[in-house]
Amino acid sequence: MSSGKILVAQGGGPTAVINQSLVGVVLEARRFRNVTRIYGALHGVRGIVNEDFVDLTQETSHNLELVAATPSSALGSTRDKPDLKYCEEIFKVLKAHEIEHFFYIGGNDSSDTVRIVAEQAQAAGYPLRAIHIPKTIDNDLVGNDHTPGFPSAARFVAQAFAGANLDNASLPGVYVGVVMGRHAGFLTAASALGKKFPDDGPHLIYLPERVFSIEQFLADVKDTYARYGRCVVAVSEGIHDASCAPIATLLAKEVERDAHGNVQLSGTGALADLLCDEIKDKLGIKRVRGDTFGYLQRSFIGCVSDVDQREAREVGEKAVQFAMWGDRNGSVAIKRTGFYSVDYELMPLEAVAGKTRTMEDEFIDEKGTGVTDAFRMYLRPLLGSGMPDAYRLRPAPVPKILKR
Image (cartoon, rainbow, N blue to C red):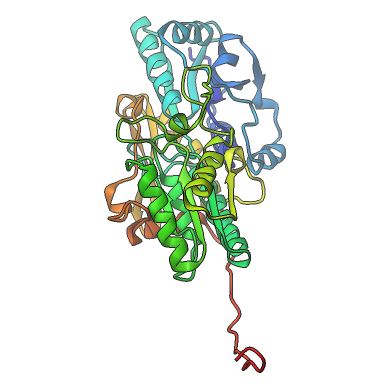
């Protein structure tokens, strides 16, 4: 007889809407009479191995709705990247607690974890249904039109650059904003949605999908500064040279690495400072400022897309429906069906796990320093309603008397 137990966990970087997916799982699961308990694992797969579970069955619907509207991971997250041995431990715990439905909300690594655990269960003849629920601000999950978390982060980036542009127009100079994105430039490209007038920034956008040259970068900044008297630049943290070496490592005297050996790109501020130093030293422009958006863009509480909230809830709901009514494991995927509507499919785990999507060529302009109208059309409906707008004076010049 089925135990009726469900386990849900959250992995990887938090987002503004990941709790919508969590609550979508819990509330949808309650609709099925065969579900007896809904557990949540604290801090992702680490919480599973350590058996750190909480009983979400006892949460009130009202409190769940409040949590759903709150950014970041309510269950906590982890950066652990499980290998085969780690996944074997996960499976042992699931089996010991008689959990027969496993939902993991996360990105590329999380989908691979679900795949390995599902294979372990199948090999052991254990009746486990394992479903991956998409989440990543990088928008780099294959098979998805877009992923929950990205639209809200993109909304923040677009608004932040709109504000930076207004600031830069008041006090002209060069401004460099560094945005998250190691391999995919979707989030950095979202900066273009903050433009309204032809001379608005960002004037230059640099993405990891294109090779970055310091010399060409300086030439671009020089030309833009000469044309407008100022220059706003959006840069992805993952920009690299022709040998795929991160620019941050080429300019920095010391390189910081994370626990997995990857060059630390997020949250250091190094790349923005290094690029600003290059501009000051090589171009002689005095007013040069840089910012690193870092973790601000992930869970910013005052800048959430209502479209993102709705879809994040629905992928959680659909995950439960696929698990209860289907006969296979998989990864929930968002498919665009019109302008603007979406549908949800269950993709094979092996089609998603461990793979990375990058920006399509049709979204990047010929020079490689901007985006196309196709990208603007793609992103605009995702940003949601109530996007703020900026306006300008229409000055009527007064004739000079002394300075004619």
